[in-house]
Length: 430
Ligand code: CMC
Image 1: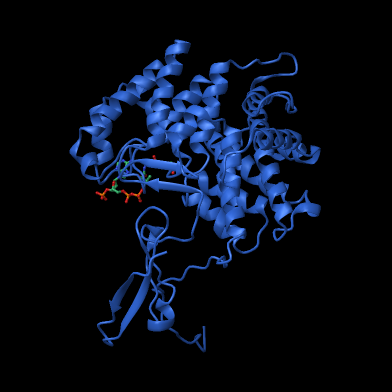
Image 2: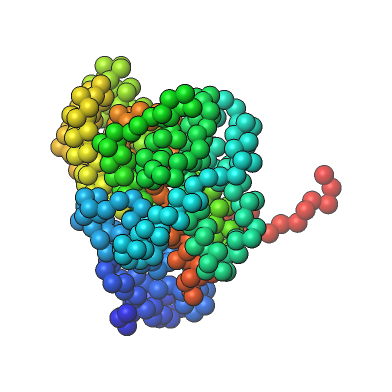
């Protein structure tokens, strides 16, 4: 790490304070403001954390201007082409690609943890028939905390890794239960002879009366979707997992908090909102021009869902891959979802030529095309954000584990600018 500094001058006192610049292996330097409060009694203000690095991390690197995304140094395009989701899970969790033996052992371990307790199954009976699957995911993930008293010591590295394995293995089972409950079908048990993605599709679409045999095209599309959603450094849900875990909360509780954060339409919930928007356009016969005019209107809260990103000021590299996948899949299936895809492509074309979006560097993000693929696979809209959560679980738990191993880890505790009433006395009479 370099020893550069920046000097801040307090114009009131004339005092200078030198702050070190910290540099990672890639990316811009970061001003280390930790000495600031002690030496000046000022702290920093950064709502939305657009200028704040909250931790050091060796997991994922994003260059938002260049549209680059690396997991542990490997470009997302190469992983999407050559890897499997479980191999990416191993990479994110452990830092290196597995040897063949490590991969076999990892797959075996994940397979052996796919079942959830029958008591968890009974939780779903308590949910209303039309409960949103994300509501069920938040609740049942929190409930998992109550099952593993013998292996939930957050200070024990072995317990941490067992928790990570349980989370990766049980998420597909829990996601499928949320879906089955919402359509009133019996729950399916996992089948350990199937691959991770085959097993998920089996639990989603088989019924006791009839086995569903997923097509290799769907299995590969799912692998790809999960790989692309596996991690994205310090986004809202991952930061939520870190903040929750920083108090010493157990990993299941921390990830329940992450799922809750992901649910919002500015984050993972956008994939659901994109399809609703595209279907709305197709069904209402609205023109693309009208939709774009609404998105640009400052008096209208409507935003083009699936466009814009806090970090990417260029085409989201995940969206590029998903767009191509969407194209190939719909062509192969001769899918009825073609009009949605064509509308999406036309919307993208017009947006990318429009000054409003060019000036603000608003490009399609990961959520713009992913819903069309999931729809073509038969996954209902209400499950889209659950699919995101399924892929992102490994990212959340990798960050939680990294944080727990970080000697600089402290409870996350931001400060504030107090704008309330100054001190006053309680009235003598009322
Ligand atoms: N449609 C229309 N205008 C937009 C959009 C959009 N989708 N996104 C940003 N803008 C405008 C915004 O009005 C603002 O304009 P102005 O400078 O004139 O006030 C400018 O662009 C900057 O927007 P911002 O809200 O300050 O940017 P942000 O970094 O805080 O928000 C975002 C990022 C992703 C929340 C936002 O772009 C958005 O709401 N997008 C739609 C929702 C979406 O697709 N979310 C998925 C994000 S990617 C996956 C994930 O993280 O889960």
